[in-house]
Length: 79
Image (cartoon, rainbow, N blue to C red; front, side, top):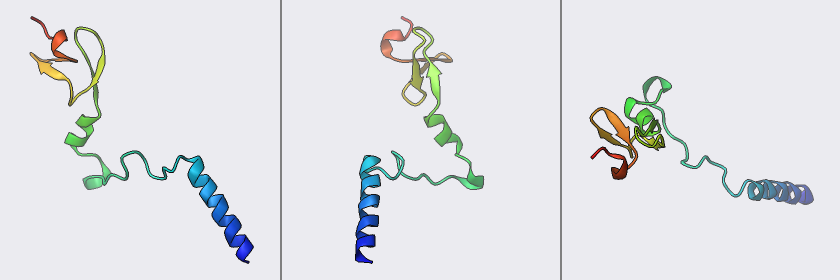
């Protein structure tokens, strides 16, 4: 009986190590808003937008919004 417990523990530890010690997703669990959907602000955080000048994709919250268009950096802003 004790041998079985040790064997099960070793297998579980091996699986844990095989997954890199990460059992949860990178950010952990996130609680959904009402009706199980993401809120408007939450969904905008992960949205990618394309830079108008160099066509690089940037996360919307890090992009620069200027005259109705998105830019990836100050270097891409029109002069």
